[in-house]
Picture 1 (tube, rainbow, N blue to C red):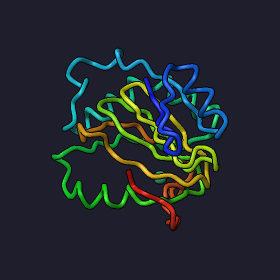
Picture 2 (picture 1 turned 180 degrees about the vertical axis):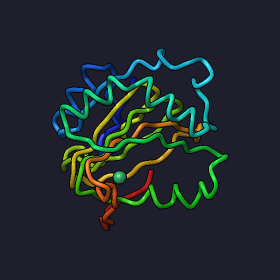
Picture 3 (picture 1 turned 135 degrees about the horizontal axis):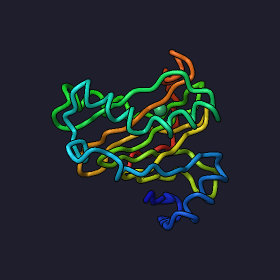
Picture 4 (picture 1 turned 90 degrees about the vertical axis):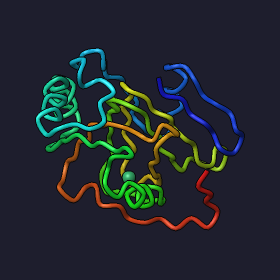
Length: 180
Ligand SMILES: [Fe+2]
């Protein structure tokens, strides 16, 4: 289950209801997918073939179609990041810069873990949402955020998009921002 670290106070928000209530204040959607449904060979597998990625999308087709009906997504895919990813350092350096998008950024974690860091309000400052397998969040459009990996440095996630250019990152320069 997802956990949140509030940077200004160094408090943690834990427990599904508390996490959902906290995120709702910032219009961040938080839902859960049952990753027990995955075929055994695809659980915690970070070097997926194209065919295996398609199997993941098929496994969660009902969940994807539900999001399509509710929120209008038109394309979706599976992304993997691990030490085996070519230019992983370059990619992470790009992901770790504060930015916004013109549409929401929705991710369902299938294996591994990841952290979305979101700019909250004056009371919270930035807060870190630590996600594990089964956690789904959607960062609202025009909300300042960035993504990074946890110490295990590997993740598989499903992404959904409305427009082809919806994922373009617009840099947000924050003079007070500290990465960790
Ligand atoms: Fe983003």
